Image 1 (cartoon, one colour):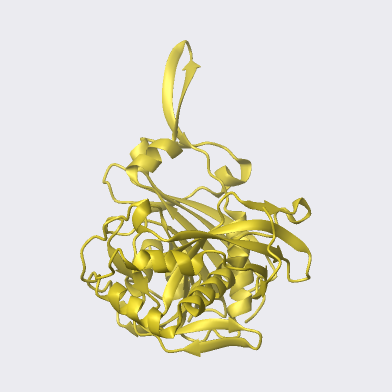
Image 2 (image 1 turned 180 degrees about the vertical axis):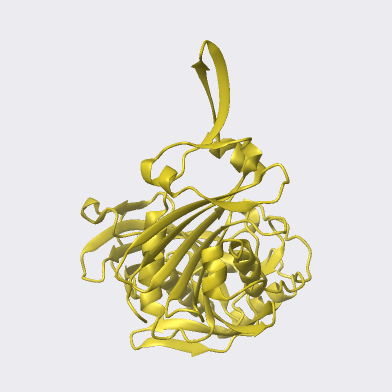
Length: 378
C-alpha cells in the first residue's frame, strides 16, 4: 500500500431538492469553519459524510437520518433582516474526525490480511465477504470469519451471519481495496436499513445496502469501481418479540481494563446479557452481548485514547466462554437447540441465571482477557 503524502478532509451533506432525489453536496468549508449550512426544510437532510485521505487510506464516515432525527438535528433560527423577522433551517456540520482516525488505524492493522475480498466488522466480529464484480452490478458472498489471536488473525468458516435489527442505528465498518488506485477504502456506516427494528437481517444484505448508500458519492464510486451492489432477499422470519425484563438473563461482570502498555484504563462492572434468540453461527455456543453501562470508572490520564469499543470483542468472547464453561457442553447444546427452534422454555432461565451469578472478575487489554480471582470493586 502506497502512503499518500497529503492529508485531505472533505465533508458532504446528502440532501433533497425540489425533485426529491437525494444527492451529495460538498460542505467542507462549512464543517471546517463550523458555519451553519442552510437547508430549505428540515426533512431535506438525509445523511452526512466525512471523508479523510491519509497514509494510503481513504476513510468515509456516513451517518443517515430519519425524518424524526432530521427534525432534531436541523435547527430553525429566526433573525431580523431590514425590520422583518426571517426564519431559516440550518445544520451545524461536524467533521467526524475520531471515527475517521479509528477507521484509518484499523485499516492499517487489517492491511496484512485484506486481499481482494471485503472485511466487514459488525458487533465485534470480522466477517470476510467475497466481492463478485459482474458488469454493472456486484454480488457479495459470506466466506469466513476472522479472529484476532496473539499470532495474528485466524480465518474460520462461516455459514450464516444473522442479527436482529436494533431500535438504534446499525453500525458497520467495511474495508476493501480499491481496484483503481493502491489505496484501502475504509467505510463506517451508521444508519438505518429498509426493515423495522426487531426483524432478522444478514450481514451480507446489510453490507450491500450500506455500500449502495455511499455509491452516490463520486469519490467512493470511482475508487471502489462499484456502480451498484445487489441486495439479496430479506431473510425469512417475522419480528422478534421484545422480551420483558423477567424473560431476559442480564448480569454484571467485574473488570479491570488496561492499555496495551499495561497502564490502568478503567475499573468497575460491565453489563452482559445472554442472547436468547440467536446462537453463534459457527460454534453453536451461546452468545453474550456486553454494554459499558455507567459502572466503569475511567482513568482520566487516558481520556480520549482508551475507549470501551477497544475491549468489546475480547470481553464478549471471554465472558461467553465463561458462561458456556459454567453450563457445560451438553447443557449448552440443549439450550442452543431450543434457541434455534424458538422453543426455549421459561424453566430454563433460572439455570442460566445461576450459571452467570458470581462469575469471577476479568483483567483485560484490547487483545486479551484473563480471569482474576480477586474481583475489583466499582
